Image (cartoon, rainbow, N blue to C red; front, side, top):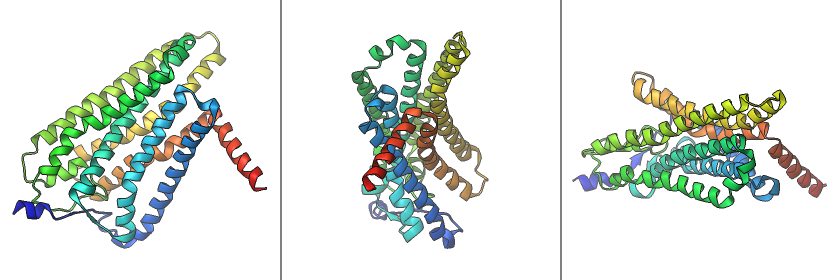
Amino acid sequence: MWSNISAVPFLLTGFPGLEIFHRWISISFFVIYVSILLSNGTLLFLIREEHTLHEPMYYFLAMLAATDLGVTLTTMPTVLGVLWLNHREISHEGSCFLQAYIIHSLSIVESGVLLAMAYDRFIAIRTPLMYTSILTNYWVMKVGLGVLMRGFVSLLPPILPLYWFPYCHSHVLSHAFCLHQHVMKLACADITFNRVYPVILVALTFFLDVLIILFSYILILKTVMGIASREERTKAFNTCVSHISCVLVFYITVIGLTFIHRFGKHAPHVVHITMSYVYFLFPPFMNPIIYSIKIKQIQRSIIRLFSVRISLNS
């Protein structure tokens, strides 16, 4: 009996009670998704084409943009499908579990990339003369591979059991995309491991990453305050502003989403849903804007790119 029930596809949910506005809501989501794809795609193109951006700092920025694109491309089809076309069904193995795996893995990857970027700023300010000898292209590749492995391997233990759990409860999910914490609640099985493991994983990734980033910036601040020239202090600190902004954008949304899920049980369901969208859309939307505003090399590259396009069209 369980095998037959488990074969029933899950049903995704948009904004309960606002179904008549789904078409209008989908327009704003479409605009945000297109903005994310264009801005992060442009950033990746510039870093690839501009030789002046072939430095560790920009390689890590490219990893951040690629991660944001990955999250966006993973959630966009089902979100727009639900809001635009009212296509709510999603299969278990082929789509839902894979989507949950990619979403959660890329979240840990993004945290790891932000940590690597903090180390990049730490070396650049603490030991600038050794920067190029420490942060070689080979080292950046190893760190990038390590960050990817940490994200995708660490998510296998809680995701794999989802494939053989029987599902005999409601098949209605609370969002327009699949998340591990929502899918596991629909299982008719012992989910103790799936409840405990993510808590430990968050502590060893997000929480630990935040502590290391905070400690690195304490050391950076100590170094910057020891610089005699006020102009040099300002210049050194400005190189960190964009990264600090991205860190705040990412981890504040993580903390906000965590608080809503843990302590907002009596809050309207639409608040939970909205906070989830903020978590998945706000960092990818803001990161390219932050770096485009604060990094002059990227500003110049953007100007050159559009100048070339205009001259070719004229």
